[in-house]
Image (cartoon, rainbow, N blue to C red; front, side, top):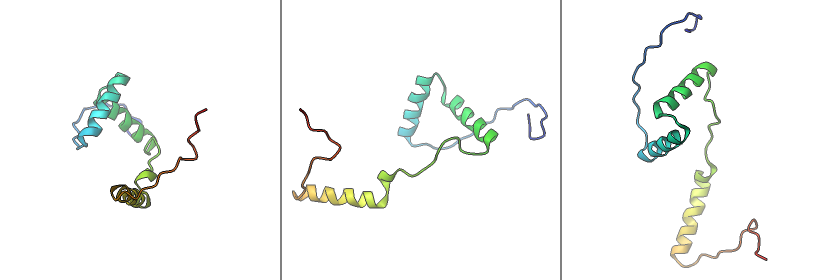
Length: 97
């Protein structure tokens, strides 16, 4: 149906966009595991966006890639490279009996 509720025949169109090669490879694998083609997966996504007028999942920044964490990791790498790193057991690691 179109916006006014009138039925029409869907006419397929090509949509082209670029993906990082690794992202494409992982998506192809995941789609294969689900028994879907990438085209079918994107069609499902597009239909849901069109129906709900929203991205159908939460979109947020991964805190791992925040500027402060990247600076922290770079500092730790420098300490390791200079032989100055000190490592301590993390509180969440349980001691073996």
